[in-house]
Structure formats: structure tokens, C-alpha cells
Image (cartoon, rainbow, N blue to C red; front, side, top):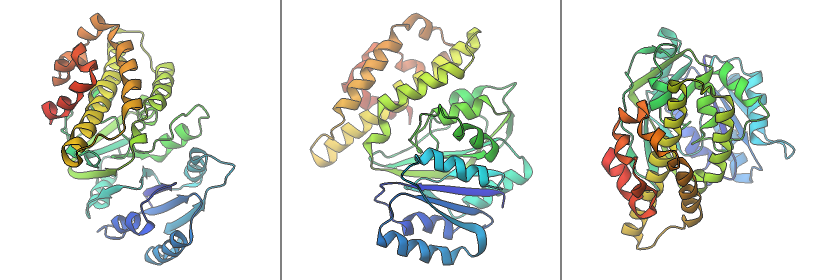
Amino acid sequence: MKLNFIIPVSNSDVTINEIIRNLARQKNQYFDISIIIDKPNDLFLEQIFAAKKLFKGSRFKLIFNSKRQSMNQTIAKVLEESKSLYTHIFTPGVDIENDWTETILKIIDSQSPDIIETRANYRGMIKYDEPIIKIETNKLIELKTNNKPIAYSSPILFNKVFKTRLLKSIYSNPLLKSNNKQYSVDIIYTAFLNTETYYLVDSIVTRDWNYNITNFNVLNFVKEWNYIKSIMPCETKTQNDLYQFIKFYHYQIFLAGNLGHISHWKMMIYGKKINTTSIENQLVNELNKMYSDFESLSNNMFLKSTIFYDFLDEQYINIDNWKYILDKII
């Protein structure tokens, strides 16, 4: 098979049936499935064996994660044994359309990009459809001559398909810090630094239903950004601007925007504020560090060419102003 879905299931409230239904209804069934599961209960086991009947033969693989291994180590082992050319980390909560695999496989056959990205929709605690910014769609892009995909790609993992060799290299690295399979940044940008071609398809959507505030844990992202900084070249102004921009995009736009959205709308709908205080304070600390280099940020070539430049303002360090960020972009 050309495509493998690796599905890590750990302490999730999502049932196996909910995860499998997306894949069972795909028009094109030419793909493998590898489910990695921690501590399955009786209901999970019952649903797993029922699901296995839907995907006959060797397409369906079930891996019980050892207590002695992290999920990343188990994913690394699955990748090492995989014969599929491409891999998608299909996290619980992801929802795809019926023609998703059909579209992805057509792109693989016709273009063979290193990374394929789809449009991203967010649901659950947050609800918005992410706009496409400054990247040409439905076209193979050579990253040696065009760094826009690195700069403007969504800072998330769930809407991307990678050549398996890229993920093998990343997950076999003991320095990998990410345990966040939906919103990882170290996996994304490590892949981009080792990638030659990229393809953004706008005809399909990958939707993520997230009800877990810990996916926005800033302390985890700080570790990931420290790793990215250690591997990303920043000798030239262009290289330094690129690193500075993607970090600004992630902290000031993505994280602050999402946290502001969560706090504001939960208050509007339920009349109470979800407890994001600790995460918000952690992010304020990182934004203060970032804004200490305000002059350099204000001259950033990537930032100046996008609407994000409007948010280069110390008023957006203030938590109360985060609720305005996404509204002005989407």
C-alpha cells in the first residue's frame, strides 16, 4: 500500500468505532491501518476486533504499546516496519471526508511530493476554518526556490501527509520532544528542513475535534522550539527572519488566537471561563521574551508581507486582547 494511517490511541474518550468510521467510508480503500493503543479496556478490545473484520488481510495492524515504551518509541517501531511510501498520523478526533484518501492517492501518483497538506478546520473547544495564506494551491512546490510553505504552512500536524522516510528519521531521533500528535511543531519543521517538495491541496479538508486544553501546553512547545532552534540554520537575514516568523506565527497568532477564542466563546456560551490561566501566563512570558527583540520583528520580511504584521503590537501580549486575533484573520 502507498499510504498508512498510524493511529495512536492513549487515554482518549474517543471510541475505536468513532476513529474507524472515517476510514471505513473512504471511497478508495487502498491504504493500511496501524492502531497503537495503551491499556485497552474490554469495550476497546471488542470494537477493535469488530473493526478488523472491515479491513481484511494484512491491512489492519494492532499494536499494544508496552509500559516500558513511550508512544513516540512505538510509532518509531511501526514506521521502521512500514512498507508504505506515505504516512498520516491519524489522531483521535480527526475527521476526514469520503474522498480524502482518493484525493491524496491521486496526488501521490501524479506528483510524489515529500509533504502533502490539506485545508484545516478546527472544531470542539474552538470553531473556525483556517484560511490559506500566501501559498499556491494544487501545485508541486520546490522548497529550494520557494520557502513560502515553510513560513505559512499551518503549525499543526493533523492536516499533513508525509513520505514515510521523513517520519522514520524524525521519530528515530531520541531528541524528539513532542508528545502532541495534533499540534506538534518540532515534527513539522524538522520535516520541512529535510524536504524538497511540497503540495497544498485545497479540495479536501482535515477537521480536528479537540476538547483537550493540554494540547496547548506552552511549556511543551518551549521545549519543541528550543529543539527547532538547534537544528534550523539562521546565518543569513532570510534564514533568521524565517525562524523568527514561524515562531511569532505559532505563539502570537495560533496559540494566543486559539486561547483567546476558547476563553471568550466558552464565557459567551456557558457563562463561565474555562481554566486556561496557567497556560495563558506561560504564553505571556514567552511573548514578552519575543517582543524584547521588537526592532528585529518589525523588520521581518515575512511578517511585513502578511496581515499578521497588524498583530505586532505589545497590546497583544495582553490576554484580554487575544479574543480579537482570529476574528481579524478569518
